[in-house]
Image 1 (cartoon, rainbow, N blue to C red):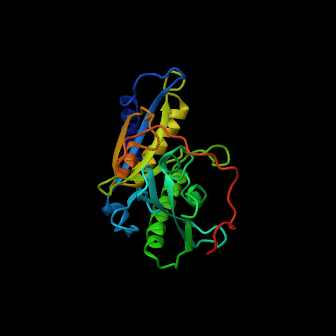
Image 2: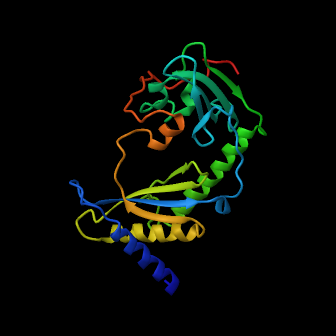
Image 3: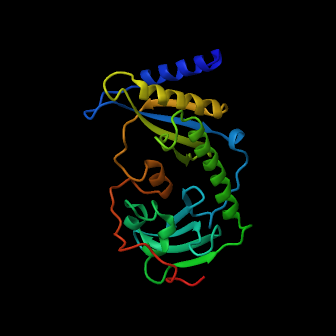
Length: 257
């Protein structure tokens, strides 16, 4: 390890230890690691929205606006066509607030919008490859593919024995892309080899995104789901909701293309 890498690793270890909050009852100190990527890092991104009134809840995948009926929302979802390989479908439908934002609802599974939609409101169309939403979808997939590769590359253990922490990718209101990683350190009360593995992993990721702003903070789980940010975009106060349960996964016989 050269001197530059040694200094970087020492810096990450120090930041991880300094960010520790209270020790949790089940052991360890949870951390939230963020890498903030500006346009200078990811490049100019394609944008698209069904209308100027739709809020983008999931980047490149889900948009919603209030419907005429109270507590209902007109929703648009982009997802791969289940019978058409890599082609995208654009699904529209009206859903209730619990079915939109409840756990395992449309926010979690945009590709199942037609199953949650109010009767006779769902439509689904296969998009041409040059549709703007397809360009945005592929742009986001490119960021995600690079992120997954970097996570695997910077994980020092063989992938057949263990896997790196699973990152999240979200977009903030100002357009900044945020990579988020949740970790737990000092699980046995002291810094150990597993913590060293995570420190090396983070040092490698930080080096892979040199223009990204990095943050390491104590992680306190938000009991509201989805995130407060998604609720704000929808214009609704955060609530605890459960979506209706679907009996089984859909087939492609419900709607004609």
